[in-house]
Amino acid sequence: MFVSDFDIRISNLLTSVIEIQSPEYRISANMIGTLDPKIPHGPLDEKWRSHRDHSRLVSPNNRRKFEIIVVGSGLAGGSAAATLGELGYRVKCFCFQDSPRRAHSIAAQGGINAAKNYQNDGDSVYRLFHDTIKGGDFRSREANVYRLAEVSNQIIDQCVEQGVPFAREYGGLLANRSFGGAQVSRTFYARGQTGQQLLLGCYQALCRQIAAGTVQMFPYTEMLDLVIVDGHSKGIITRSLRSGTTHAAAMSQPLIALTKGARSSRIPPSRRFIRRAFLSAANINRS
Ligand SMILES: Cc1cc2nc3c(=O)[nH]c(=O)nc-3n(C[C@H](O)[C@H](O)[C@H](O)COP(=O)(O)OP(=O)(O)OC[C@H]3O[C@@H](n4cnc5c(N)ncnc54)[C@H](O)[C@@H]3O)c2cc1C
Image 1: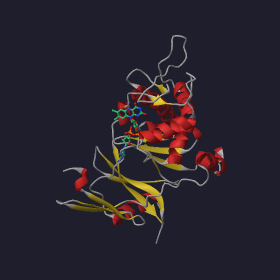
Image 2: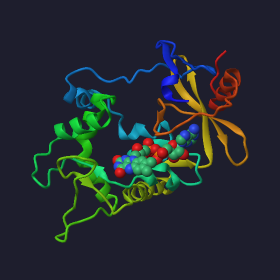
Image 3: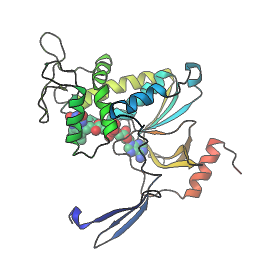
Image 4: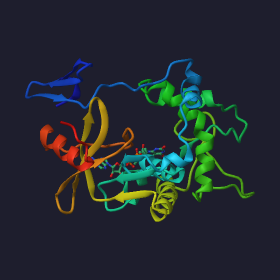
């Protein structure tokens, strides 16, 4: 059956009920929460920068009081967990593989784009933003893509500091190439294994934090559901893929779920069970 055979409707964004109808079957599913990306206000190129500049800071001494859950340990989740751990937060990081090194990020081959303009061929943050929006068939969130283009140069610098062996010119400077139809050379690469090398760099940083005790790693653990209390995410329900046992993990800060393909199980426990399990695990007394 072709996709065009489906009639996919988001019938009500507020309750986020998605109905998929086809000649053969009909699916109706409740999604978690609403589809609200919470993009800050303001001009496109200032939205996230100004949000960062005006967010309240947490003092270094207070950071250890916060417990943060990160679901996923690929390039996104692994680097977030390592960075938050380095900042002093207490982080719990979950993945269903046996090791963060097996995340699908390992498959990325081509390279990573940054508007460094080393070749002086007219590259800029705006051009990288424009090409990325175009490459995403104009369906990506513009403010988020702009931020990605804006910090692209720092990402390369951070990866180099973490020891990622990017290809270099004979003189020792970082090499880059024109890739994916771009008219400028902006792709930084490590042979055909960029994702694997990036993941190794990320994994090293994560291991350092695990050894330092700021990050607790939970491999073989699958997130089943998100726990929402009074409209705020307060924890997750997980299942051990070794023993099959279900647990509730609580946190003091909003959940950071960073996975490309995060999926919750098709056999979720009942809401009542989730709430009870979570409240007891979190030791929250809610009569
Ligand atoms: C073949 C290929 C080539 C690519 N080439 C490039 C390229 O050249 N350049 C580029 O920029 N991008 C490339 N990409 C895209 C890039 O690899 C991905 O966008 C990126 O790696 C996604 O990283 P991630 O951390 O979000 O997800 P992943 O690396 O997939 O990590 C997902 C994590 O979430 C965890 N997880 C998922 N569901 C659950 C759950 N229910 N409970 C607990 N944990 C869960 C997994 O265990 C895993 O740790 C390529 C992708 C592929 C497949």
